[in-house]
Amino acid sequence: SSTIIDGKFVAKNIRGEIANEVARIKDSASIVPGLAVILVGSRKDSQTYVRNKRKACEEVGIASFEASLPEDCTEEEVIKHISDFNNNPSVHGILVQLPLPRHINEEKILNAVYIEKDVDGFHPLNIGRLAMQGRDPLFVPCTPKGCMELLHRYDIEIKGKRAVVIGRSNIVGMPAALLLQRGNATVTIVHSKTQNPEEITRQADILISAAGSPNLVKGSWLKPGAVVIDVGINAVDDPESARGYRLVGDVCFEEARKVASAITPVPGGVGPMTIAMLLSNTLSSAKRIHGIK
Ligand code: NAD
Image (cartoon, rainbow, N blue to C red; front, side):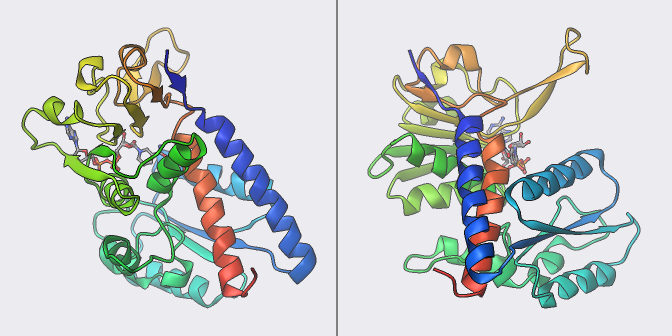
């Protein structure tokens, strides 16, 4: 039977390692890493993500800064807050919670973040460097980085393997494919216009699914022994749950675990890794800015 990749456990260990390192640089160099989050509007899900990020920072000793702007604010106001954080020496990481309201140009906003503080890794220069051979981004986007860290911590070899990524978004699918390629896998991307995706996924030694579509990946879509990383977080109706819904991934977990050699559950797989990688990026940013080994 397959290994269940325990992202919750791995993320907890990583947060412990980060807390130790934060305490060490506080003692040795009097540096406190700081993360600034900019939230525009009042989306419930975004508010929850921002709150979780603040809590996670507190737990490891990272200082958090927040700017909350109304839904109808202007681009200039958002950029003003970004440049304040760019110039604030106590801030080592700046994150703009996405999605932004439609009247605000996302590209313009992401461009305004100093690449040295771009802990989400969404600045076009960081993405560009991720895509180029012989170049390194200053930061790698947190969710795909979390996927790679899970593969690494479970000793799953990437080099020479066939990897398939479902999804090509800027924040998950595309950077995940680039990271697998940098790890010397042979990578294919499957997206919403791909015909007969199951013929492609069946060749995958490693499958990362980031489609946002519940029960998309059936057991029959998998090569026996494949490693399956399920990034999807989908709410499906569940009258038996108090909330009326529950969260599932893209993969039919019960079917897939019979075929896969290792698989992440949802929840408790990639989800907890994302915030752990954000904390890790913020810590490395503070160390790089202050020249700490
Ligand atoms: P998105 O909607 O921006 O992109 C989805 C991608 O999947 C698109 O490229 C689309 O072409 C492709 N796709 C959609 N349906 C498909 C199908 N039926 N077959 C093949 N390809 C299909 O979404 P996103 O922001 O990349 O997020 C993807 C999923 O990951 C969502 O469920 C999201 O909630 C989840 N997510 C999880 C985390 C985490 O921390 N675990 C972080 C970000 C996103």
